[in-house]
Image 1 (cartoon, rainbow, N blue to C red):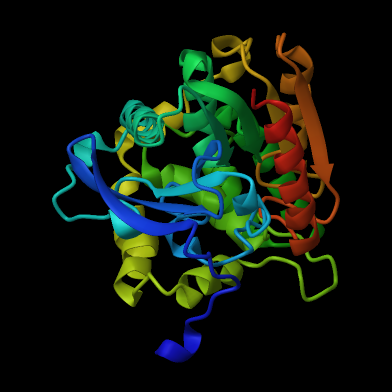
Image 2: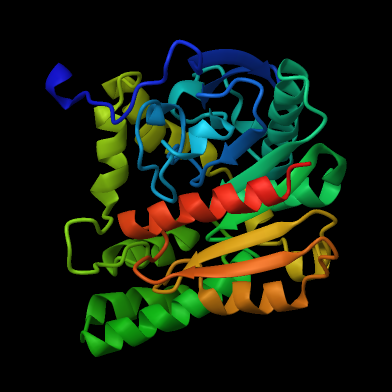
Length: 343
């Protein structure tokens, strides 16, 4: 199946392009390190999901990574993508299901941070995240500001329950507008969030978010994103096998969504738990977003006490995943933000 394999750029012999297995939280986990400039400031990117490892290890040599492009970024920074436990190249049948909870993911991310700080002899690194990863990363930025120069959150989640309430309202409106009786029946039966009883209960709203394409916006061109865009990135990867993809989208998915994790994501509230940040912060959100509702990040950014500075940017052609044009703009935003906040 080599005809699917392709890369957008090669890194010179002077740079670094390596996939490594490291022990994190007693589990072998994979990271991808890419840079044309060894010794440059380190950027750790924490992907969304759970169990959707893009940007991740599959992105070696790939410019577009769902939220940003990368081939300019690696000229200035040492960019590290990490497949979280139970996902992609960090999947293993030996991973205990009871370790799949928010505190463990935060602990893993802190350990990856410390590995990179020690490996590259840097007191601090930059932290970037997307979606589910933004729950992990914002927690890190708040708890361990001494480890990070800056934080950037793409599609930042602030309160899952409040977001689900807004999404539920939107889904009912869409169902009524399309006269979708099945959607109305199932959504009415499950009722308004929070969903704490079971994965089946929580899965109803996810089903109709998928059906109504909440993550993607069609800008009317061939650079818009679909579900298959992320799949294509994994299929094109020189480093991902079909088994890695299966481990992400099937086995990893089943492993990740435990009762404890569902409880975790339905009970946090960053409005009260993280009212301030002691490092510079930048949020970037799709203006067409219908998955992580824009109202909440607007309110959160306004309320956030951030003495080192805060910014909120909008990507006009994007929803939850970012249009290629917006991804290129995001790359430039990242470069400027990170350079401005590296001593």
